[in-house]
Image 1 (tube, rainbow, N blue to C red):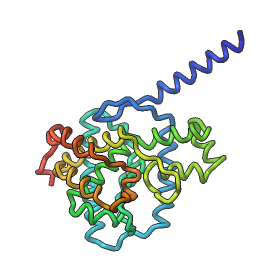
Image 2 (image 1 turned 90 degrees about the vertical axis):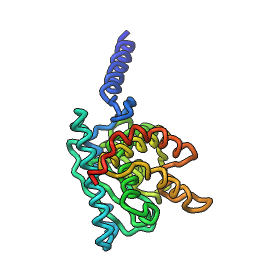
Image 3 (image 1 turned 180 degrees about the vertical axis):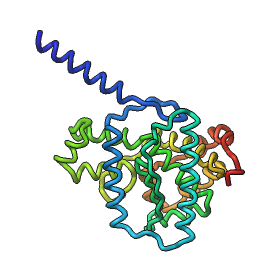
Image 4 (image 1 turned 60 degrees about the vertical axis):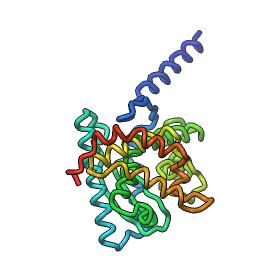
Length: 271
């Protein structure tokens, strides 16, 4: 009887933890399960971000660097405005935005929890202009504010047997846990641990990104053109950016279907 009571108690604790960890993705309304404390994710994010900047060279191209910062700030302002208007400011209350351009030929970009955004110079020939860059940065920032990385890390740490205790994982297997973190947020493509975004996450980031760039004054219609250009890169082998951001023939269709909603937020006067 005592064993039955213990198991029942344990089940209730687990169920409560799951219910507490449930949240809703902005705009799409999807229920998500983030098992890791966001405070721990943010702390690890800052550490990894600072380490990345130490190991990588910032671009010396003043014009391109200023463009990255300009686009980033406009989209960040749009994100903050959207969340404030919808009573969700607490979701990004600890974000301290930073935007950097690094010298790297890889067509890649990412946004860590807390608003730390890095764009690689290798993606600029594909974005072509400021609006194309807004597609990429809006998309990556969308992944961060939707907390997709937390979902993916929660899943991977559970598979590794650490459950939801990030501190234990860091203590027992620090390198493996850091690699999981970097892969979960698309920061490293050289680790051998790739965690592709699910179709659900990718579609959500597309939709949120369209709205954020539209609110920032960038024409969301350019998103279709950018993803078409991206899908044509690399011949038979897709670029690394697409290895963590899978693209298929349905993407353009999904973007077109959501475009009327995104255009409701488009305000060219913000440009």
